[in-house]
Length: 329
Image 1 (cartoon, rainbow, N blue to C red):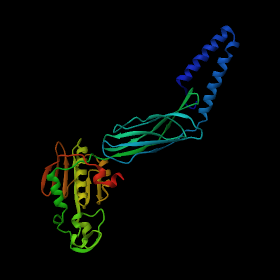
Image 2: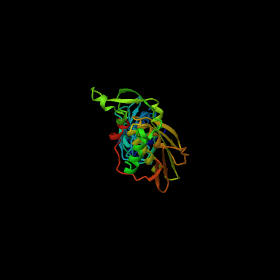
Image 3: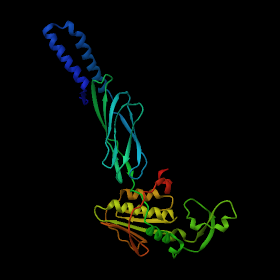
């Protein structure tokens, strides 16, 4: 009833009580009343305390998304009308590492533990198993809270080879957009603007930077990227596509990304949208439809840009905080 079970300490008390009862049969109960009665009262009180205990409400707080190797803190707040000591165990998926077990007082400070991101993807945590114990630790009652949360792990972010970077830079330059449009007016510089659009002569005459605004610039400064992968190579496709998209966003152009899982358009300053999409993407093929950049992952991963097909050779790992601060803000 109520899922009550004795703990090891409770089993020891039950065993001691049983021995005392057996001895009372042979030697008389008077000398053993001091053992039997207190033990029986303690066991009954423990059972009553847990029988009336309401299932704890669990609220989980998860760390923000990050790339593999990131470490964050998960917090579990357990709320009940009646405080009780409890052992908590949160279920962790294979793509995350951590020790998700601990002892807390329900209704007290939250239980926290560190988790390390290992694999790209959307990883579900939970359910939470709570083993509540009475004050003396004689009886326990188990609750399962179907509280699930998701931690998003981005693909590994790395630098591109110099050859790929130069071709992407040329593609993002004004000459790479035949339909960029004509000069329209000057306006104040914002963080999402490319430095190539700064009008240095006008900026020198005032305190703030100003940039050139072109007619139909929004449509003309979008680079289309497609990404495909054969079975078993989705991770490498996601890494290559992330490197390409972030390099283009650094150049101040909008990226229209198409993968086997759909389409997303990302403007400079919104790199997290591209990384979130690539965190979930699986393998599959995408028709390039004359895309500006094509990423193809198989036994070898390639990037086709400006008519040239180059091998994707990931370089040093990039810091999200350095090139896309809005991702980790």
